[in-house]
Image (cartoon, rainbow over all chains, first blue to last red):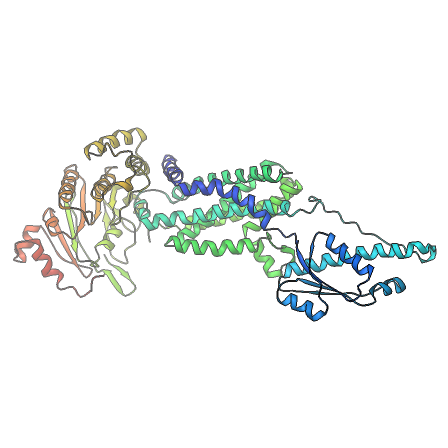
Length: 374
Length: 237
């Protein structure tokens, strides 16, 4: 135990003497959390629309204004032909073409229906899919109003069709603001980056400068050494997490709905798992460069598969399995549940179990794989 | 004992005894196998075959016990550059289980004898190499081990500092610490009680410097070393 205290003292001295690490601890969470949520935003705006109007009637003009005023679309061109519109897509000026056929107004009034053509540039998948969706809902809305406008004056009760209106309501994030979704996720990423990389580089640095050999020739116990590396970075991680939560509250007004205790419990265990992962990497690598690449490879996979950007439910089966095998997935899930939904500890016991297993396995491997004698 | 890396016999059936309290010189060209043998004796690596005991403990099964009783100074400088002199002493003393009070007391005394009291709170990284090496040696014997292993401790150090360094080695030997030292400097070999010369992983000679010079009819250890090392088939790395 005494030995451990000496090791901890030394590690803390080194960490607090390292200005870059100190900067990482304080500025990185603040900067990342202030900037990223605005950039990593799935709310698609500024969809460039080419409006190809063969009708040029009051109705088609009305539709155009409705689209323009929806806030999502930017009318970038009024081509005269479909080919011309297509050229605009090819040049990247337009994402969508809405083609209004001749006789649009006449058919709508006389027959109550009219087909329009939407052509979507599918290079930017998300933007085009969402853009097409938005446009369809704007059209549906226009259509509904039209039905009212056209049919109401007739007033014949028999022609009235009963309609079911679907009103959506988003729970836990009523305005569907992406920042509520993204900010907690980014907080997790921060912890992942700082925890994973700092610990991965640490033992390797001792290998590089040669001090590890001096350590290995002392009667130090393996667990003392690993714990001596783990505890300081754990504390740094918790500090970063706290700074992150503060920024989240001050900048975005997001205060965890659930209990802070549960949140910190998870953060604590998650950090242990992650630091174990970092230490494991540093026991297999011989240089900081190697450790960096290996850590980068895994962290990249962790993040992309974690459900941070994309929904896990829509991944193919094998990918879903892989996703469950990364600690990040569970932690992001839990943080969102606790922060946004206010879930209690009893709702996230399964995730707690996962994280504990990760913590034990990764740290166990790190201790097992650290060799004082080769 | 032997140590093989694949087909390569880094250490090839070497046999020797080191007496308690002596200064034992371990010579050989680059790549002769000195460091490999020393690492085995320090419990940093397993021998492939053979037997060896250090301070009475077996190198296969009792490495952690060996580690309690030895000090080691590697070729690479192995103190922490971003800690001060006293912090380094405190850390290494602490791992060997010395109490805080004793560390402080002996640390202060050590800094004074080294003439580093003004630098005690400076980062080790800012010291000149010669001072660093003297400090590293002092730290290696700070916990009063029975044996200290020194792997080319005076590499790159100026002649005056080397002389002072050897004074420190004698001082340690007088206190009863057995010194096991590798070196490339043949004048340093003269300072040893007994010397072995390793060539291509084997011990080619083992005796006092005086007797070796007589045996090889040379008036310096340089001559002895040339005669032996010339037989080497391995190219140095």
